[in-house]
Structures are given as C-alpha cells and as structure tokens.
Length: 490
Image 1 (cartoon, helix red, strand yellow):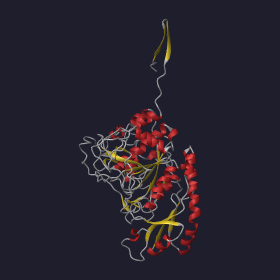
Image 2: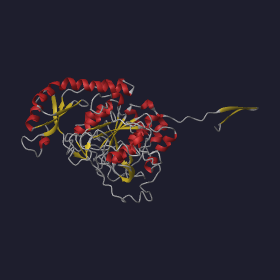
Image 3: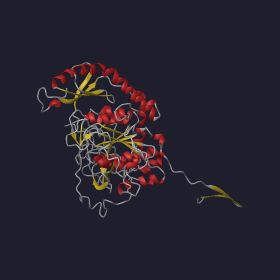
Image 4: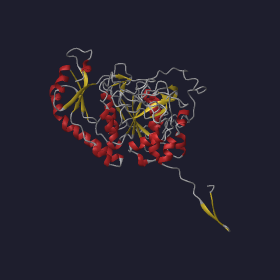
C-alpha cells in the first residue's frame, strides 16, 4: 500500500484510493482485427468481462459494509473512499495487486501574459480572421486544398471541459446536427466532487469548461467559425468531450474515467456504453505528476495501453518543465504507448519550457518527445465567444498533432486505427530539427533527439506519402513523324 495515500490525515480520516485487481484482461487478440470498430468492440468486451468476473466478490464485500466506491473496467480497478485500516485490509486480499493513491494534481501551464508575445505576433489583433501561422506552418492548408479536412474522424477532448457552443466549435461538436443538440454519447463529466466554487459544479449534464483550457485546446484541433477564423487543424472532424479536472486539478481516477468514456461513450446516465461511437484519437494536454496525483508512475500505463489496443491514438503534451534534460516525467507523456509532443516556436526553435527526454522517471531511458509542434503564442477560442493570441505551452502543441492525425486519417482511411503505422509515418515525414543540447548520452544533433523528437510535424508531407496526389493524365497526340506526350490543360 502506498503510504502517501493518507499523508497528512488522521488515523481514521478517509481518503480516496485506487484498488487495482490482480487479474487484468488479455488484449493480445486485438491486433487480429484490421477494422477499428471491430477491434474496439473486442477490447471493450474483453475488459468488461474481466472486470465483472474478478470484481464481483470485492464489490459485494464493499456493498455489504456500505463503503462507497466506483468501478472501472478500462483497467480492472475500483476507486474506494475509506480509512487507512480499510486500505490495509484490502491490500492484503489475494485478488488485489496494489492499493494506489488518488490525490488531486494541478495542471501544469505557462502563464498567459497579454503582450508578452508581441514580437512574435506584432500587428495581430485578437479578432483577426485568417488561417493562423501555426496552422499553416505544419501544412494543414495544403491538406485542406486536396479536400481532406478531417471528415469522418472523431476527436476526443479530455480536458477541463469545453464550451461547445463557441462559434469556432459549435458546428464541430458531434452532439449538434445544425438544429438539435444531444449530449448523450458526446459528453461526460468525470468530476463528481467539485470544489464549492466551481462554476460547472459536479456531474455537469452539458459540456462546461471551468477553466477555459479545454476550450482552447479543442479549438486548435477543430476550430473554425465559418467566417474566416481558421484556428484549427481539422475543421471537418467532429469532437466529443470529457471533463477530467476540477478547475485544473485531476486525479488518476478522473483521467481513467474519461479515457473509459472515449473507448465506449455512454448516455447521460453513464449507462449503455457504445464502443462503435468511440473516439478515433484523444488529445491529452495535461500531466499527472508522480509527486502528487500519480505517486505510482505506472498508475495510468495500462489505461493508455488498453486505449491504444482499441485502435485509438493517445496524443499527449510532453510537459512544461524544460529546459533541463529528463523533464518528461509525468504520465501519460512518458509512456511508450503515448504519442508525446514537445513545443516549438513558429521559427522552429525549441520553446525553453518544453520538457526534454530521455525518460528516467520509470527507469526506461526512453527517447521522448516523439515529435514537436507549435506551442508559443497560439491563437485560440475562449468562452463564451472570444479569442486569445497568447496560449502557450505543450498544451498547445499536442492538439496540433491530434489534428494532424485527424487530417491524415481522413485522407488515408486505411490507416484509421493503425496507430503504430500512423505514428511512424508522422515521425518519418516530420521536418527534422536538431539541437546543441545533449541529454542522457543522446545527442541533440541526431534525429530523433531528446529535444525535438523526430522534428516538427508536417502533416502535408505525411498525407502526400499516405495518399499521393493523382498525377496529371497524359494523352497521345498523333503526328506525321510519330507521337508525343502532351499535358492537357484541364
């Protein structure tokens, strides 16, 4: 049992903790399903069957004693509210592998100071209507010009919530058909015990953003008001949302609950899950520090791995703890199953705050980040209907890559659900960037490196590889001396 669960609490003062079951579902058969929907259904059914079978005895025990808990299947565990003696008692049971902390962890962010980015954004008013330079930088308009805007792709936004009816987001929310709105299967609130002053309260029945952060990140993925404010990567994609933080404070249980919603969305009662309505790619512009909410660095590891097994890409911000080496130290960014994103300026220099690799928090020495994207002075939507040009941090970088995956998959549907192949393609086609900073014996002058990863994402290059543009047709024009090839003008 993790002794930090009850740090600062009295002998019988209750705390929230996670009870992880010893038996976990075997998802090794998921790879045999080529089609994402079928793969997702297989994963969902395997996970739920394992949880129902192995949790039955423990749940009956807790019910009999009136102990509050919440059951999860994405990773076979329960969130329990109880005393130190109860936690010790549960830890001794044979069917339980661990009892872990579930403390709140504040969101890491770069302060937004109006005017601090003036040299980079000179003359750019908040009301500007145009394709943003960060969006153009990564090649999105070139992909749009070929008719691929993310259509058919569902993006999951797990964050502080979202103001779905912002003009730049409303038409992109899956729960809105242009006339009617339904939040069933499109929105979930994993905050059940919000602080008294939280404007969204607990269990918000409709999308609500208690911090503005989630609205900003969503707008980088899909934002476009149809009137010229093109601030998003994939305006043709549809998004669903889940609030996993109480005004920026998340817990492993909240994060898990949102991931679980994304692989099998539920109705407004949290019932009748439908894996056929799952997200295709999930953006995660947050981290869970090991010193606070994620005292066990691997507490979310199986969660992320199981989501990816369902054919869903998990994109994560690398963190804002640079410029020192090995500062990618928070879940989910340092997991092998996550696609981790560092931050660049619009001149392709690394942002000083962008966390670096390699990963030492779990002893793996894994090379991270995987890739980089713009994260300095990004123009975003703000509730209820305004914009800000000072959104900065790897929280801004991650949505660029999430949107890039939506664009790529709309252009090359054969890649949908093929997460490993998609990641490799985006890394291979990234703009290679190098650094003078060496970290952990890994040279910054190599590609990939622990500063930029494989470089700055270039979605146009990736799409051109996965879905090569059609070559102009040629015709043969007869002449007395033979034939020659001519290119038609139409």
